[in-house]
Structures are given as C-alpha cells and as structure tokens.
Length: 54
Image (tube, rainbow, N blue to C red; front, side, top):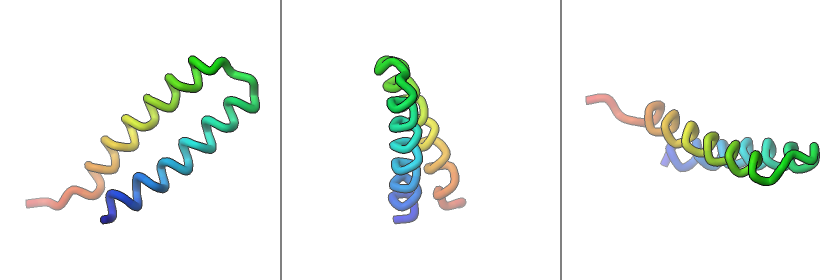
C-alpha cells in the first residue's frame, strides 16, 4: 500500500514537471523522454524504499 501512495505522489510531481515543460514550449519529444526517465526512477526508488527487509 505504501508503494502505491509513493507512486501517486511521484505521479503528481512528474505531472507538474511535464506541465512546466509544456508551458515553457519544450518539444513534445523531450517532454516524453523526461517523463519516461522520471517514471523509471520513481519505480526504482519506490520499490527500494518500500521493500521489506528479510
């Protein structure tokens, strides 16, 4: 459950960054590349932070 909350928070941050890039008239290709990279980072850090230790 905490992973889901973490990813929802990251989605808001990524959405804000994407919106700022669009408003700044950055090319759509660069916006999509940035979003894909940030989603990958969010998943990796989310799993690492919420994983239970054995």
